[in-house]
Image (cartoon, rainbow, N blue to C red):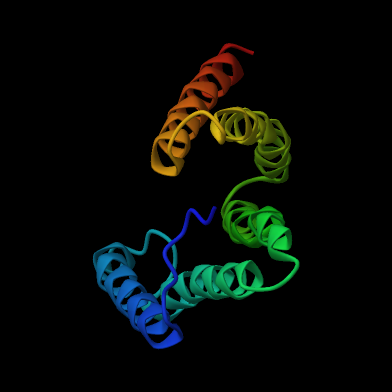
Length: 149
């Protein structure tokens, strides 16, 4: 049973281009306040995310579709966030961010276990929603516990 609707390549890339354009528009206000770099830097960050989406889509169509589950674990966004924190904060604050990043795998594991367990019990959309809510609850607990330590 296939959970996903097959999207044609032209439609997929059209959706992707619109998403990147919207992301660029959204980041325009942030870049004018210098919250994360200039417009070009923010557009590059959006493009990195778009490339990850394309890789996931392409891998999902192959015989080894399960490898698409590995792509989100490539540290694309960790590299970006660690570079930003490392270039703007002290060395100790950078190390604290990296340590917190290690613990952030716990909510991700909660999400994966929840979705795996519910995959045969609920519709795809509902199992992903419950998994996302489980991730949010685990992340909130992590942030609360981290602030207590």
